[in-house]
Image (cartoon, rainbow, N blue to C red; front, side, top):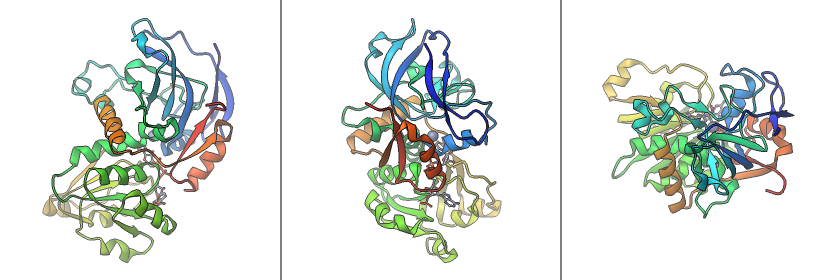
Length: 337
Ligand code: NAP
Ligand code: ZN
């Protein structure tokens, strides 16, 4: 069987229609007939070759579709089910991290659209069946797809550092990840401050659940938010002055990077030790966090705010995402899906 896909043949090129012949289905693998796939900024990094991929690449790692076949060792009850797969398509399931439910930290972790694995901007997509997650019935596939990468990436650290009682959360960058972070933080009971470069997002960001919005264009804006937050989640991929952002933290505050920022973190050790700040990162989440996130999202009616485009418009979506012209996640669909 030949798989029809959209691939970048070289770093930085547009995606073109391309076909490949997959190998025989592995024992634990599931084959998914793709209906929807979200477009994450990590796909842009991959298309550009920022992370050293070998080409061609087929991006796409917020995949939803129906399981049409499984390997000999996989659960045959999956066939016919609607499932989703995020950034992670497999792991060893035997190392200390996998055994602790931190499969995202497994040294053998396999990615959905990197490391030679072809992703979800395609008719068919494969993943280890144990990384295929049932999608709650209450959610449409279009609005659920971004939960599989953007959603888990913000949910896992919010859950990890959540505090009982009055908890003040800041979210830097209100794009695909950031808009879901506002919704999750709000549902977890936090007082939420959004930091955005886009004054035009102000009203929408409040409607997403932010109590306060700081437009970061002028230096005085960040100063006004000084010492106000317990947790700051950074979702931008740009190079910013991180010490200015760290100063929005109260003592014992936590600054967590999930966006692939382009520069190093310039926070003086003196400030970290005197304020007892924690500077940390987050990399997607494990399978238990994924299941928990989907259940939490279903309970609180959290899905992504999406713009749906046909798969044939994938290059338009990529260009508009690079131009920060999306509210707040593109999801590509095959006709008839
Ligand atoms: P996105 O939809 O493009 O959102 C990024 C947001 O950052 C933009 O909407 C914009 O928000 C803000 N921004 C853009 N350029 C900026 C600049 N020059 N200065 C300040 N702010 C800027 O991207 P995304 O899909 O959310 O992904 C964000 C980052 O997370 C990417 O680097 C991606 O690779 C990474 N990521 C990491 C993980 C992980 O596991 N850690 C998982 C998924 C994605 P405003 O308009 O509000 O300013
Ligand atoms: Zn992603």
